[in-house]
Length: 96
Image (tube, rainbow, N blue to C red; front, side, top):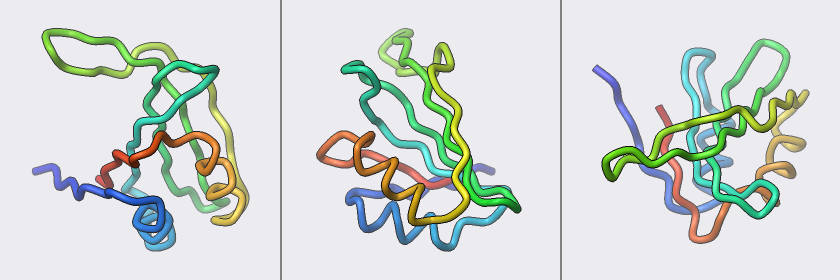
């Protein structure tokens, strides 16, 4: 069973990142080079990893398509700074 929790604000996203397990992650809607995208963030023993994917629509569903960017961060602060410029407003995210 997959559990997802909706996150409706940037402070909620940051709070979830601070308690994220190694087998969990966050998916959010963002913008990269002026195009709508999915932003995935996971935790690793060395910090955080973010993967940015273009969005493909299929039968009214939004699916990840091509990887546009992969970036590693050593700590929560640098991850938060990256996401500040990446996530769309209002924030639409989920933790899983």
